[in-house]
Image (cartoon, rainbow, N blue to C red; front, side, top):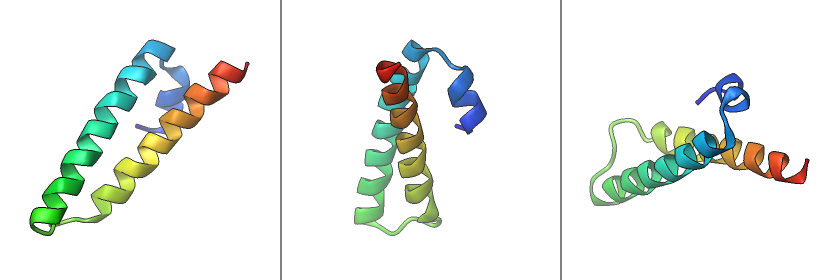
Length: 63
């Protein structure tokens, strides 16, 4: 998810996206443990997307 998409999304959508992203990250991590991924950079991409979403949710809670 791009930063502009994250800012435009509602809180409920972000929470759903966070759950989905975390699940996808765990699945990729497990797949990488069993046999190496073709593109291990995907792990970093998912991790950063999770951080972006979580940061936006925290920012909204503070406000």
